[in-house]
Image 1 (cartoon, rainbow, N blue to C red):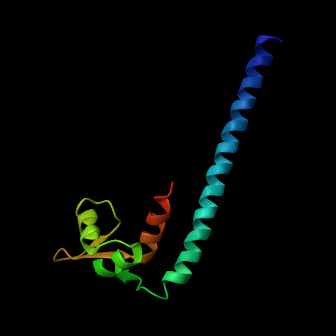
Image 2 (tube, rainbow, N blue to C red):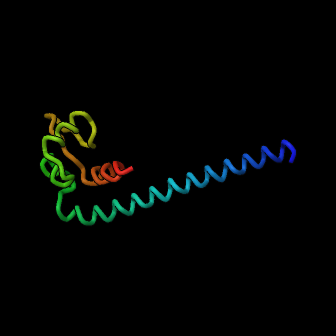
Image 3 (tube, rainbow, N blue to C red):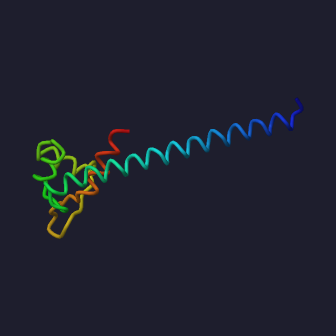
Length: 102
């Protein structure tokens, strides 16, 4: 096999691996989106779209103090309002929770 054929073969293998990697990422994202939809369908009946720390803690199965600590350390997604009150958006928490599995 000549050098050009060998390089072409290597490039083809690399492209196949990259395509396979992109497909795996797409499949993972599709799965995460489907899981998020299912969770939202269930959780939106139990929790408001925008929550206080107490509700967020209950939804995540954590203590309220843990949620507040994680908020202070920017570990958990939250929104700060005038006066410093933190609120938690249900959809952001769902995606954050699902991303922690990976």
